[in-house]
Every structure is written in C-alpha cells, then in structure tokens.
Image 1 (cartoon, rainbow, N blue to C red):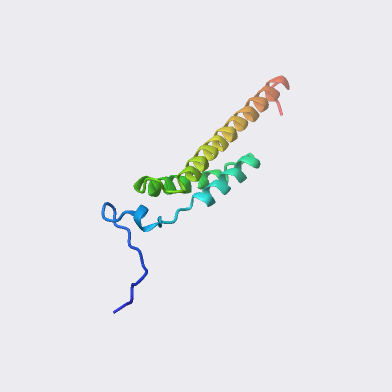
Image 2: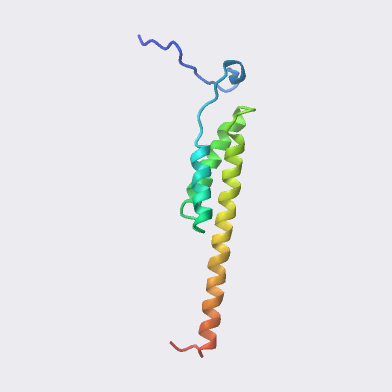
Length: 109
C-alpha cells in the first residue's frame, strides 16, 4: 500500500480548490513567454506553440473559477494571435511588393 497523505486529488465537481487553497498547475507562464518572444521577433514560430499552450491552460482555468493563471493564459492567447496576424500581414505585404517588382521589370527575370 502506498502512503498518499498530503496528496490532493482534483475530481471535477467533487473538490473545491478554494477551500484547499491549491489549484492545478498550468503552462500559462510558458505560453505568455512564447507569445511575447514571437511578438518581439515578428515570427509565429514561437507564437503558435504559445497559443496552443494558452488554450490548454484556459481549459484548466475554466474548470476552477478564480484560478490565478486565467489572466496570464488569456493574455498569452491574445498576444499569440496578434503575432500570428502580424506575421501573415507582413508575408502578404512582401508578396505584393515582389509581384509589383516583377511587374515593373517587365515580367522577365
């Protein structure tokens, strides 16, 4: 038999984390860092994993009202999507510039 004293088991609808004082851990901080790094580098290479981690953290925080990581997860999701949108906009802008440059040169390379 194993000694499970001190372990807290969370069963949805059965335990109240506000009375226990502990919430399950999330990856909200990691998601926020990845999203900010993606925004600073204008690259969605780190923003996409940041959005994925933020979505999983939000799923956990929705089950436990008052979870302290809810704001971090929401911020990571918003910043990640902004980064992805900016990356798509810049790629579109570069594509338009290339098309205009090819058209201005007469279409021959």
